[in-house]
Length: 207
Image (cartoon, rainbow, N blue to C red; front, side, top):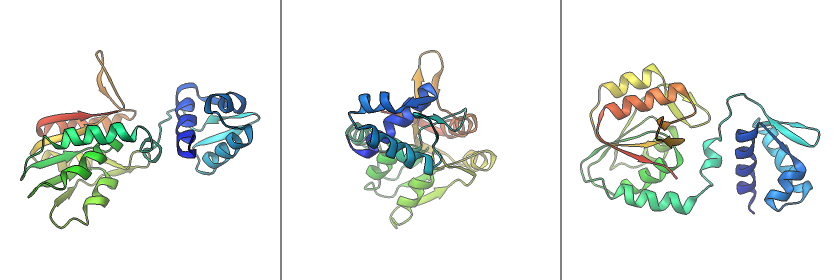
């Protein structure tokens, strides 16, 4: 298993259980205890966890897998979803993107459309598209979230409220019958809702 995959698995277990043990991780990941300890050391240096005797615990009560680790998971699925989603975009569209690894893949696909305008609150998407002279890029502004690279809050929402989108591609952390679309962060969810409200059509993309 690649290191990136191991790190993602460790963080996912921390998100679910709040703590991990070296022995259990070594067995589940098919890695040596020494390798697991090095992985935990790396994550501690990145302030993603706190090491304990024989394992580690999550640093925060509200724990979320950061975007840089989500991006390494399910890459094939993300690309297939992105191809299908991008096929729904026509030339000249005004397209909204919330943050997320799957929405990022969609954004990479739609840049081949002619005359499009992209509206996003995602710093990583904005960074990739800013060098495309053929794409009109609108970035919302707002307060940056380190976990998702998104700009959220009143400034982002006020910018979105002045715009009309043909289609919005929305990334989520979960979908349930009872709760509908969900994300880990309340302010992020409110900003996403504002983008949804400004779009004629909404496409939810998640792997």
